[in-house]
Length: 426
Ligand SMILES: [Zn+2]
Image (cartoon, rainbow, N blue to C red):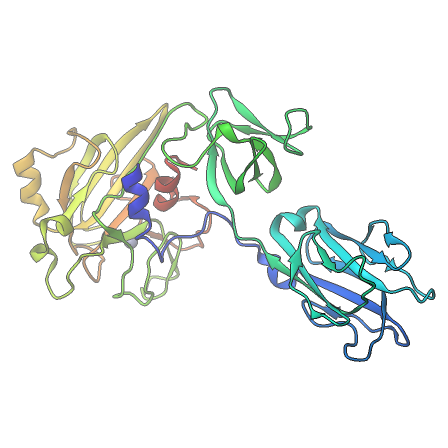
């Protein structure tokens, strides 16, 4: 499967991220206030703006911080003249002192709950005789201690953590525990069935990964989380697909859109709103100055995505054009793959190679030539994965397709990219 993952990097534009971006990111914010000698509360600032007056030798005394836009909270504490570190407070409470003429010397800030899974809190302080100190984050100390220096201004901001990587549960038993913290004695907050998709953050600590499963964030034993090769679907059957063209890309400049990905709206056909029930693919080495039949053998080659039995070869000049349909067994489930818009030259290829309904084919075996037949405005392979009895599935539908699995016309269609990347049906 290494090969497959290498190829995937070429499918750069059309893919949808497995890790759902945090849509709330724009509205997540941090607001803070700073209490200063002679000034009192300076007024709220947010998201990295300065709060406090510099250059006037005015002693900072206290501060407050709060976050909004996502569940979770923020905790912080102040290091004050005569006191040292004071207790942690949270969510808008005052840290430090007021009315005591005691300088604020250092502070620490950290996020808690869900927001801490998605954001880092960064902060820096302006200190007398030093000026702005470096940004620190997530509970680190900003400012000085033991030097009798006062904080004069404060800046705080939230930065989205880099997104995690896709992994899956690779256990021999039925499920893997998702725990509240990184310990086998920690409480179990979810059971993740074998083969489940998870998002993994960072590297393992104490043998545990921090993972997100179905929106629940917790910790799972690192030895049962894997990142490549073949996960086992929960029905104990494995279904693995390869890309059906070499050097795969779905960049496709002949359409209105530069890419034709799963579910994408095709606005340039006359028969209503059309959403795509497959992927449009071809080799990145396709030479646009030549017709499909004049391309190199590697570019022309269309291959079976997995072992299976051919259920249809043939075609017409409309719709899917010349095509091959292969049926694949996945445990007790049957799925089909469609390879559409093939060249008419495929007809001779099928004759020469004995490919017809009932023929068993192996993964990677050539099954035809890339073409431009049917409802197609340029050479490409329309590749679909579906459950259903037809050998001529719709390539488009008239309602929006957003999930990786959608039902249309009595059939279930899968996002091929999702299936191939995860080696399994969603
Ligand atoms: Zn298509």
